Structure formats: structure tokens, C-alpha cells
Length: 228
Image (cartoon, one colour):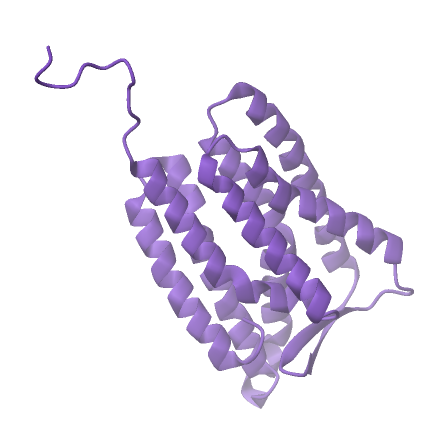
């Protein structure tokens, strides 16, 4: 999470358990890839927990850049690709897949763009008010660019679930959207870190969807046993 090292490690443990349960409940490779979302969040939270420690422990200072960039790769690059990709793999409707292909392309653009930013600009982590602020060393604040990439990120991660033919998938988009709006509204300046606080809620939704996918599809034309 974003409040302290212990909070991050605690969240990582819970998310890890949720991830393992979700993966064991999945039946197909696409389901397992989708079910791995909580496990990836677990790794992300573990890394931010280590980042918290590196800000206080002189013995871990040398590792601070590694923890910083690893967390940012997960938070800003992995999700806009992984979310639309795994949802698309679960989809069976051809028309819906075409829409998801567009959103996956958008997510890939975000992946490349953020990757270039992380390569070109140094990032400084500033702790404050029990949160972490990731400060990019831009020559001047690229407000327009930030807005554009935020919208593209929003499209890839939040809109994609609403295009799915899986009924409960929309709740994934609702949780993503609500958590993002909450972080923007109440924790401006710490959005990247605070938004991850809601990963635990997201994990329950992922497991819920996996359990729904395990249910056998009823054939309305089948004849009940005893009537044939």
C-alpha cells in the first residue's frame, strides 16, 4: 500500500494468498493469467514496502533506485497492458475482441511512452503525510502530456472491463474507476501510491469473477434427467 512499510507488507501477504487461491481455482490458461492479477499486485506492494525501508535503512539506500523503478514499472506500465490483454483472452465474442484490441493498443502505447519517460528522466521519491510521492525530474511540468497519458491509462484499465461479455467483469471497471477517482480527489500528488491501496478490493473482484467462470454453462435445450 502507501502508508508504511508494514502496511505494504501486510497488503502483499493478503494479495499473495488471494492470488494463489484465484490461480488454483482457474481452469484454463486465460483464466490463470487473469487470476494472476492479485499475485502481481502482491509483488508490487512488496516492492513498495522495501522502498519504504530503503528510505529509512542506510543499508538499503543503494537499492532505492531498483525498488523505485520496479514499483513504477508495475504501477504505470504493466497494468495498462495486462488488464486488457487478460480480459481479451477470456472473451469469446469476436466483435468485443475487436474493441479490446483497440484498448490493448492504447495500453501498449502507454507502456512504451511511460517506458521512455522512465529511461530518460530520473525519479526522486519524496515521503510525506504517510504517503510516497514520485517526483520526475522534468525540465518543466508536461501538464498536457500527463493528462493525455492519464486518459489513455484510464481507457485501457477501466474501460476495457465494461466491453467484456462476462457480466461480473464490469465490477472490475467500477472498482478501478472508483478507487482512481477517490485517490485523485483526496490524495492529489500521491495518486500512484495511494491508488494501490485499493488493490486488495480489486483482488476479491478477480476471485469472484474466476469463481463465476467455473460454473457450468446451462444448456436451455437440454432435457432434464428423468424426462427422456
